[in-house]
Each structure stands twice: as structure tokens, then as C-alpha cells.
Amino acid sequence: MNFSQLGLAAAQLSACESLGYTTPTPIQSKAIPVILGGQDLIGCAETGTGKTAAFLLPVIQRITEVKRPGIRALVLAPTRELALQIHKNYGELNRVKSNRSVIVMGGANIRTQIADMRRGATVVIATPGRLLDLIERGAVNLSGIDFLVLDEADRMLDMGFLPAIRRILAVLPAKRQTLLFSATMSGDIEQLARSTMKEPKVIEVSPRGKAASMVEQKAYQVALESKTALLLELLEKEREPFERVLVFTRTRRGAERLSHILKARDHSVNRIHADRTQPQRETALREFRDGRARVLVATDIAARGLDVDGVSHVINYDRAGGARRLCTSCRTHRPGRQSRQGDHYCRAG
Image (cartoon, rainbow, N blue to C red; front, side, top):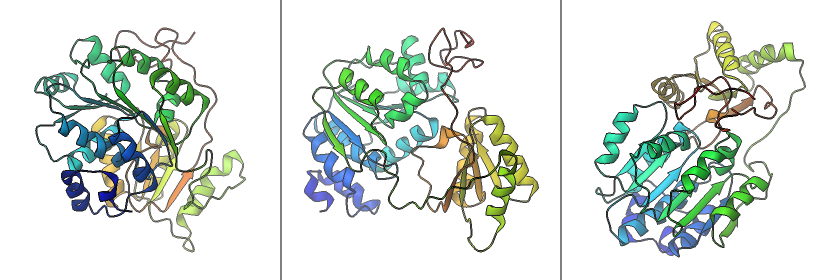
């Protein structure tokens, strides 16, 4: 099968050709005709299987076919990095320059984003917290939305964004096409789908809970105090070259500590976590992508949707933590952090 058999218009086929897309991935071949047909959709597939193009290509086509002013599509993503990646992909796939996309995310100047919105937008790509902030300021009008995309929906729920998502849904028109993409299909995702979608078509490219087929997994039983020594041994042994390595830690403090240890051993390393500024996070990813940083130490903020070629190893240095404690005021953010709405400091119950 090729892209021309999926019902895509000439402009979208030209975009695919220019990007070197020849054969659609399974999620693309199954999802694109459903989206073009106007049906709500739940797409469950492994991260890195082409989900972004699976929804951008048909949404761009449908926006182009029926032109009218205002914001036509809203894409929600759990992290700034994923929002930036989707924004970049939209720019590569869109052939109608008047169909502008605007990115709305924390860590960037909100006044600049509001001014950008006022210049006109057809597609808004956003993280939930910052978008809710703009909604409450009256800086964005979502009453004309035709398409809502919830990308990496399971990750958004894991990060405690469900209350913000529900508040955003409350201002959207009931008549819309909703597309939900997720790497897993938990009970929470199914409940969200039931409350926001109308008879969605469910596409599961891979069985639930199955590890990525191209990934070889290894587990090491090691004492807590020996984990760092084992990591250094793995990175420094020559019989299995660790060429580009992504290391996940559970906490921001752990990411800082580990990156300093690796740097002291002359490893080219950078780190990414929620306490780093947006320019610092973008620099870290850029250095990792172009090879200037062999190792990227990250909290789970970078766990989904990042497009980085040539990663040889992913190391889960820490186990995931227990249940997340949420602020008793907004029920969205962790205690001790300023809320994304900026109206209070999050506190524990």
C-alpha cells in the first residue's frame, strides 16, 4: 500500500514525497481513511510509529477543503518537547501558508503567544496548562473548533492533566471530530473516551501492554548503592558500544546529580527536566540529536513523542515512583510548585 491509496489529496501526497515518506505505517494506513471519513477515532500504537503524520495529514486536508476563518483544530500534547515536535511536523506537512499554526506552551513568554494568536491561527498546538491560562484570560476563542486531537493521552493523564483537559473540553463545541492517540489503553483512557467521543473507531496496531517489537530488553539486579557504578561500567565498556544513550531518572534532583557524575567522568552529557528553562531544554535536545551530547539524562518529561534518530540505548536508571500527590486546590499540580494558572502555590492536603 502507498499513500495515494489512502484518499489523500495531491498536496498531502506532495508533502509525503518531499519528506521521503513512501510506505504508510500501520497506524497511518488504518487511521487516515477513518479521519478523512469524519469519524471519531482512538488510535493505540507504540510511540515512534508515525502517529503524528497519521492525524496531521488528514486534518490538514480537511481544513483545506472547507475554508473559513478562526481556529479550526486543537492539538493537545503532554509536554513542551512533544508540542514543539508536532508544530515542526505541521510546518513540514502543511502546503497552505494561510493555515497558520500557533504553539502555546509553558516556559515561553505568554504575551508573545497571545500576540501570535491575535495575528490569526488555524491550528493551535498546546500543552493543557498554558492553554487553560489563555482561555481564562479570554485570549483564545475555541468556539469554531472542528477537530480535537489528544496526543499521548495516557501520558497526559499520568501527569495529572485530566482536570485541565476537562475544563478545556467544556469550552469546545460539542459538534467536532475527536481523535485520541495513546501508546496504551488504560481504564482511565477508555473512560475519557466515553465522555468526550461519539462512537469512536478503535484502532490497535499492537497488542495492549506489549513491548516494542524492535527493542531488546535487559534487566540488571543491582543494589541501590551500586547503580551508578553499573551505569558507568555499561557506558565505558567497549564490547557493546553505547553510542547515543537516553537515561531516565525518577526525579529532577536525580537527573542533576547523575549528569554531574557523568560529566566528571568526561562523558559528553546534558539533561532535561521540569526545572530547566525552555531554552535549556531545547539546547539539550539539540545537542543530543546532533551528537554533541552522547548521553541525555531526563526525567519522564521526555518519555514520549520525541523524534531522535540513532538512539542506541535507553536506560531506566530509576523505577517509577508511587502515586502522585496532587495540590488540594487545583488537583492538577504537584505540591510545592507554582500552578500553571499562576493564582496560587500548590500545596499538599
